[in-house]
Image (tube, rainbow over all chains, first blue to last red):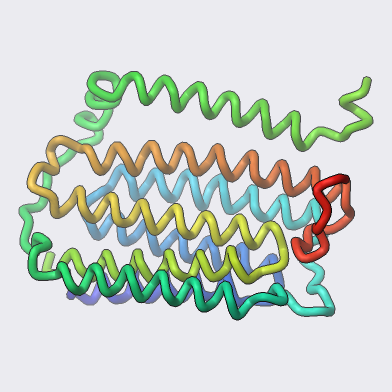
Length: 166
Length: 104
């Protein structure tokens, strides 16, 4: 365990916890950004430079901003008087704890068969680009279609009903 | 590079559980989406970690899976937040405990 790994892991988990637990919704969105940044640093720690910078661009640059816009458009920053957690919060917490217990048990029980030492892979962005237009060209086209459809769909769904009637 | 794969997998599992707890317990629909984003991200961390420690990292399989997963998650966030905004216009709230009717 290196020091960098502990630092990034604590940053990510703290950001995630704050995003889920804070009362003010805008603070939650900012904590979510911290969690995304911690994950990008973990990706960089795993020698996945392209995925790390894609994470920063897509999540911090786009998704976090989108969440902030949605909060401001829905007046979600006002903390409700009856609390921020659902009335059946205990069941949700118990389910999440059970899922974590099962996952951690599975990981720890299989720790001795997981690979521990690995040579640092030398993967350049050019190689990723070659793979994207070579072996993975069909998934790439499908993702392009999906993003276009999602963009049009999001605009139509969020459009004002009076404007749509025009 | 001394961190074992187990460390990354445990961080991903903990982040997944945090996201699941958030999605199941928060009242605000946007916070539920935030929890879902955290779960998707922890899955990406698993994919990248297995890519890094797998026997054939030069095949780029796990990396490609993570990149496509990021793209699909971006589409999901856009549509999900559009739906939340439309529901807010219709019901004047994003509180999921108050949304107990299928008929608008």
